[in-house]
Length: 250
Image (cartoon, rainbow, N blue to C red; front, side):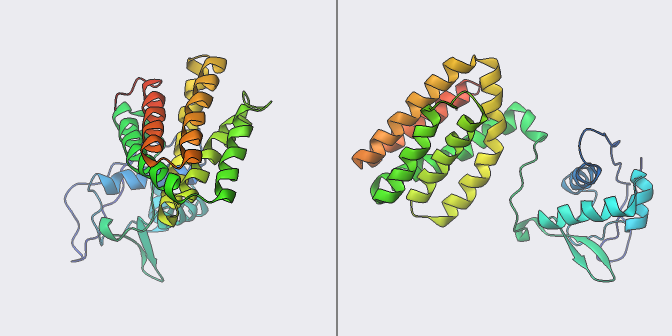
């Protein structure tokens, strides 16, 4: 389907028309619409300051209801991609002014993007582990140990084991004493869940679980000892091993 052109700040139509892809039915329609509009923005069909087509126009383009379009625009607004102006419509926000973090799940299927995610995770989590070794309090250390206990418990082979894994990393971030690290690493944790599931399915559940437990045990021991260098090394080894299990070299 072909969309009508957006309108630039000057009011002139830009050359070329955005070509939205076909809608799939494998996810909520409003999310699919939001993804396709976002891709047109990334591709430069809509520039910062441009007004998106009206709800009515988008509904015709995608052959969906205006309610679906409203929900899609709400998603884009939540992601900080557009801003709505009452009575005027939705406008594209300048990239440097966007306040939301967003990693597209479909784009993560590309190995290069997944490698970038692991690199980002390494940069943040290795330092978080070092800070946690210096700053962790007894209650924080107890919470990390509790998460590790759940990882090694009766439900370690189930999804509860993955939840415990993510809780472990969040607890380490909290022990680092930096709320921004907690925000970023909590978000990254949600993105990493699918990678954990993939590795469990492709490498043998029991083997992967035992390897992962051993890696987390080393991190915990370094935190308990209050050794920042050992904590950083243990976290580096864990993330590197996790990446290798997905055939990613860091």
